[in-house]
Image 1 (cartoon, rainbow, N blue to C red):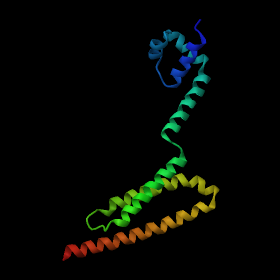
Image 2: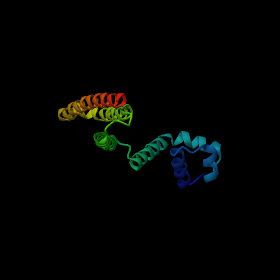
Image 3: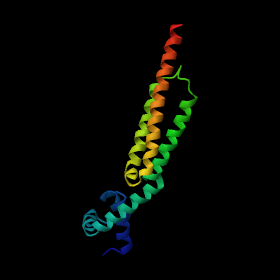
Image 4: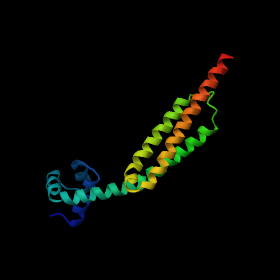
Length: 151
């Protein structure tokens, strides 16, 4: 009979995704016994696995609040860059495409929150107006570029 520390180590390693052969090497228990333990401690392994995932989410900041903040910061930085551009030498389609993708990602993150809080819909309307303004600006810049090339 193996001691409790060995079983706890098995649960920890299985929760991290280690294979039976690797665990067998690490803790000196036969693979046959590990398969039995896997059945016996299935719930403990699942619970520990969820704890491991929580640790990874915290470590890499994989929560919607962080993603909203990150997408928002990227969107603001891109808009700041777009405001400085005159669009005569840069393909604006790429910048606009990136902004649209970031906007869509941010909107996906906000949509569950917006259902709960009507005040969050106001920034969406403002952003849509900014997108129309940006599109009009691009059309003007494209016309200026064509006129410049024709000279």
